[in-house]
Amino acid sequence: MTEVQYTTLPETRVPVSAEADVVVIGGGPAGIASAISSAENGARTLLIEQRGFLGGMGTVSLVPAFCPFTDKEKPIIRGIGLELLERMKSEAGEAFQQEYEEWLDWVPIDAEALKRVYDDAVLEKGVHPLYHTFVYDVVLSASKRQIEGILIVNKSGLSLVRCKYIIDATGDADIAAKAGVPFQKGGSEGELQPGSMCYLLSNVDRYCFQQFLKDTQDTVQLHRTVERGIAEGALPEGRKSISGLAWISDTLVGVNFGHVFGIDGTKAEDLTRGAIEGRRLVERQIRFFRKYVPGFEQAHLVASGEQIGIRETRRIQGDYVLTAEDFMQARTFEDDIARNAYYIDIHLANSKSEMTINHLPPGQSHGVPYRVLLPVGIDNLWVPGRAASSDRAVQGSLRVMPNCFAMGQAAGTAAAMAACHSLTSREVSVPELQKRLLDRGAWLGEGVVQG
Ligand SMILES: Cc1cc2nc3c(=O)[nH]c(=O)nc-3n(C[C@H](O)[C@H](O)[C@H](O)COP(=O)(O)OP(=O)(O)OC[C@H]3O[C@@H](n4cnc5c(N)ncnc54)[C@H](O)[C@@H]3O)c2cc1C
Image (cartoon, rainbow, N blue to C red; front, side):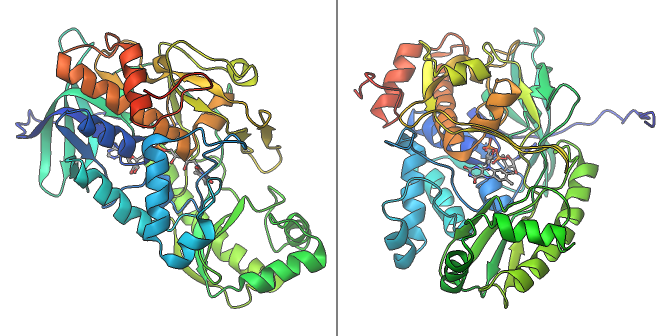
């Protein structure tokens, strides 16, 4: 490892470019729901996103479908997340709406429709969005328990945003890490789930493809065909199936297939390698599709992710660390702010290892306590989404988009409550928070009724 060299910059005066009660950083599912609920609960809310649009992995990296909103018996992710899902269905056009009207699980993502839905949804609530802006540092109070401001960089230059409360929805806990919150990254050996470059193919024929599955008895994940492709050298070693095909129309499909290993999404060099290797892999996969999969002979690559999809980076240490045992026992907590039923889905860290998958029985879910959003040591910060406080196994489940919406809704509501009454994150009344979540359509488990 080469030693890092440092230099000292001259003292810089930076302008204060904005001020808000609640600043949400990151416009993925966790950040969008945070911003909407914060504004709905009366806080002046600024939403900062490095890209020119919202959506996080679902739009930036073209992750092709929403994971289940149900526990296989009933919807358990409701509230803001479910509303946004329904809005995307209608924005995606009549044919899409008709086909997926009854679906709550694995609904394909029309990324362009979703971007418009997210823009409208935050603007309607009076959120101030600031796109094309990267947050690169924080300013702490003398006690080091409060973040007083964040340093941003964008086309206008460097500046400071003053804030009373912060929601770190970067997915990578960038802000928490800068504020000195302890975190873990990956497994005991530092291994991380792989990245995937997702993409969109047009000019494909869904009916021809379905006929091929019938004729060959292959699965929708093309187990046999992929295995044959690997054996014949058309595909590299690795997972012997496709993670998912999501049909946006009869001729347009979103693809999540294959892995790029050893990518740490908090390192620019790794993201660069992931982008280049990811695009090369996509090119190889398309050649495979055209040759091996009827219906894909004329497939045309419309787009690949602007960034390689990142499943796992930092997990903050929160006031509570949700564990695999909590998951398997389907535990309930007094301070639950959401329920989760998605299976533990840990993708292989290298091309020789196996996937880890653990399901709860249909109808069962576990609670997600408020404390997993609260990073130790800081009193005005919440971390909902992929980087919330859990062990590695549970992160493999909690990380999916419906859960991120639910955690975001709770974080935004709590932050606005804190802002309105000048409280710390830990002083927020949990029963009042739960009541507000239920009033706004969330589901917190059997017997916990809406107000
Ligand atoms: C390949 C792959 C397949 C997946 N499949 C599915 C699936 O089928 N269904 C499902 O529901 N989930 C799936 N997931 C998981 C899911 O997409 C993510 O875990 C989820 O999007 C995380 O949401 P988030 O809001 O926490 O973070 P993200 O979606 O990552 O959003 C974070 C946002 O913050 C912005 N940001 C980050 N750092 C900064 C900064 N410093 N300054 C400003 N902005 C910043 C980013 O640009 C991004 O928009 C998949 C993930 C991957 C990678």
